[in-house]
Amino acid sequence: AMYGGLAAIELNPTGVRRKLLRLNPHELEKRIVLSYTGQSRNSGINNWKITKERLDGNQEVIDLLGKLRDVTSVMRQALENQDWIEVGRQLSAEWSLRKKLSPKVSTPRIDLLIEHAHNAGASGAKVCGAGGGGCVIFLTEPSCKTKVRNALLKAGAQVLDFKIDNDGLKIK
Image (cartoon, rainbow, N blue to C red):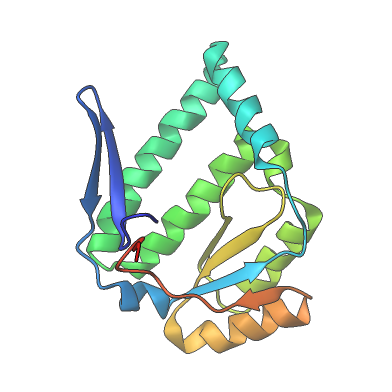
C-alpha cells in the first residue's frame, strides 16, 4: 500500500523484493466487489495461532502454508495473464486453505455472504487479512458485478467503493 500499484512480494534467502505485476489495475477493479461484513475482528489472534503452530513444527500447518505459497505463485501468473477463470479458482483455493489453517478465519456471516455472492455469479471470494470479520473480496465478471453487489446488499453486507491506488503514499 505504501508504494501503490499491484505487486508481488518475493521472499528469498537474499531478502524481500517487491515486483510490480504486469496488469492494468482497471481490469482487476472492474471485476472486484468489496464488502464489509459488519463484524469487527482481532486479526492478531488468528495470525498468532498459525504462527505458533508453524514454530512448534505442526506438520499439517507447514503443509498448508506450503500449499498457500503454491496458490500465490499460480495466482500471480493468472493475474499477469488476465486469466480471470484461473484467478477465481485460485482465490477460492486460497480461501479453502486459509479456513483449514484456522477455524476462526470464517464466521457464519462470512459463509452466508460468500454463498449469496457465488449464487449471483462470483467466481471467487476470500476475507481480507486474517479473517474472523472485516472485509471480504469477491471476484466476478464485469457483467455480473451489479448482480453480486445486489446479492450482498440483500444479505445485509455493506458494499464498499474502492480504487486500486497506483501512486502510494505521498507526503506534502
